[in-house]
Structures are given as C-alpha cells and as structure tokens.
Length: 158
Image (cartoon, rainbow, N blue to C red; front, side):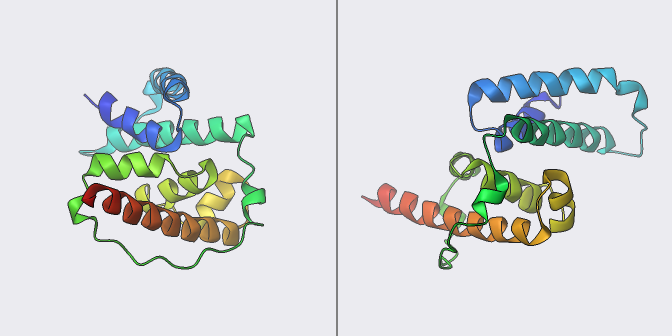
C-alpha cells in the first residue's frame, strides 16, 4: 500500500533507476527487520516511520558512494537568484523529473529541506557538512531548479 509512495521518496534522492531499486530494496529489508520496533502513534505514523527509513537509507547510500563530495560544492560560485517560475502549468511528475536532474548534493539537500521538512542543522548533522553549507546548497538548488523550470516551459512553448 505504501510501496509506490516510498519508491518515489527513494527516487527523489537517488537519480539512477538501478541504484534507486537497490536502495529501495535495502530500505524495505530494513523496514521488515525493524518492524517490531514500530510503535503506532495514530494515522500516518507507519508511513512517516517508513519514509524516514527510506530517506535515511538513500542519504546513507549517497554518503557511502562518496560520488558526491558535499564540501566541494561549497567552492562553487553563487548563482544569481532566478525569478520564481509559475509552476501551475507543470505537472508534479515533470517537476519530479527536473528535481532528479539536480546534482546529487543539491538534490539531497533540496529534498531533505523542502520535501522532508528537515532543518539545515538536521541536514548538516545527517550529511556531515556545515549548517551554512546546507543552506547554501539549498539556495543554489532552488535557483538551479527555477532555471530548469523556466527553460522547460520555454521549450514546451516552442
């Protein structure tokens, strides 16, 4: 019942479909192994608990691969603020697809902050980066995503 939603959570963090399947599988195994530790706290508590496990598993996967060096993103120049695009003409699936195109570090911070509702302090602790780095990467991810949405809309109008 929650599997499609949880697979979507996983794919927000891990760009490669093959890696997404592997991470999702590992997360589901972990959920089953720790099912006895779950305590019901009302409607939605199972979904929240499972979502946290999937998100943590995805972040751990990205950290373990070391493909993304979050610290190296700190040295990238700031991008100018992009105007916030009107996203009413873009479907959630299209936005999800654009988010998946963000660099791993940006995508991870963006998902943790904007979608999972984590604070920059929590993100910094999870990823082993500075709180300011989390805020900076989120800002850059938002700008990059706004630019991607703007380009996407222009291409659709042609």
